[in-house]
Amino acid sequence: MNFTDILRTAIYALRGNWMRSALTSLGVIIGIAAVIVMVSVGQGTQREIDKLVSGLGSQRLDINPGAGRGAGGVRMSASSFFTLTEGDVEAIRTEIPEVQYVAGALRGNTQVVYAENNAATNWQAVQPDFFDINGWGVANGNLFDAQDYSSAAKEVVIGDTVRRTLFGDDDGIGQTIRLGRVPFTVIGTLTPKGQGGFGQDQDDVVMVPLETGRRRLMGMMGLPPSAVMQISLTVADAKDLAYVQTEIEALLRQRHKIKPGDDDDFNVRNISEIVKTRTATTDLMSKLLGAVATICLI
Image (cartoon, rainbow, N blue to C red; front, top):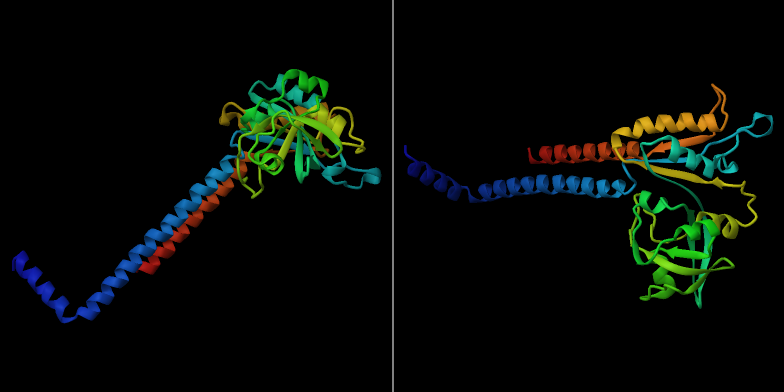
């Protein structure tokens, strides 16, 4: 039997059982489409989550105050203590050469006002490297210069959400706004970043020099001299991240005079571990969707 005879026989069988043939074809088409759609959904989700978590920085460490002990050895929350200082920032900068950028920061909430427009927003008081660590660019105007940092200048760089709330389509450069009761001059606007990896609006923020935030915005919090709420840093080579983390922990324990066996008064968070965990989770989800789709096809 040649190919023509086989084809003729197949066509005859299909015509004789056309309903069964149509339903079988429909089932195959739906099954293949289900596989394609479910695998595509998994891969799309993987890419989207990778994009979100990559914004956290795979070569970055964040250092936060750790929980200390109050009177009688009672464990206190981390927010009850300011255990990190600008001196720690400079020590990391000078003693660990693998560190590329490092910056301390303070933060809080405030009401920002311009004319009849106002909004509740977040402020961050930062050191120069903060913008490079977090990938912030300038859309209009400028960032702070050396004199702004040293003189506690009343100047502010605003995020895109704050800009639109206060000024609409204008950039607001040169205008005076109030953070709480303190007037500030807008010298720059930040390039929009959109939603962050944890769903927050990254553009709903205003930036001021570190010393400005300490003097003008912290109010009566009783902040110790030179204290910071967080230290962030990046390394030039991701391979050095684990080594740098170990060196930082040893350096801070020495500077804070922590005895062997005592708990750290700081926490070092390795962002790359979060990225790896999320990537592994989404990869597993993609494989699961593919397996389910394959079973549906069978």
